[in-house]
Amino acid sequence: MNLRGLSYRTERERINSLKRTQEVIENKLIEKALTAPRPATPPMRPQPPISAGEAARQSDAAIERSGPPPEKCNRTQYGSGWVTVCE
Image (tube, rainbow, N blue to C red; front, side):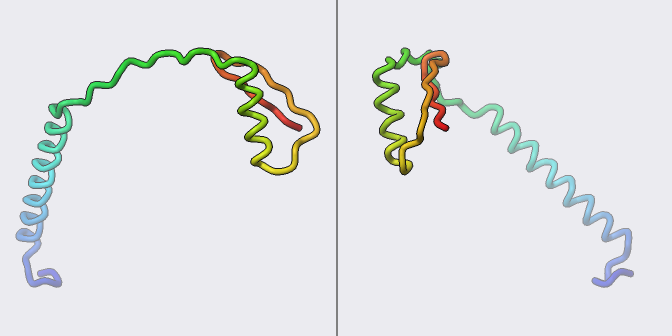
């Protein structure tokens, strides 16, 4: 007998029944997830390149918002965007 007054066998049967129920629920959830309709997403397209002037304008505005201006900043183009590194 265990603390709840059930025999070991009864306790094991109850645990096994709960495990089977859990497996059934998990399988139904997986099946539902696999068969659910998926939203149509547009294909990813590369963005057009940002001009050097637009990159400078955006980085200057960000630098102003962040506090006192740094001494030196370098702008480098990577792909369709720009990276500004300030020291």
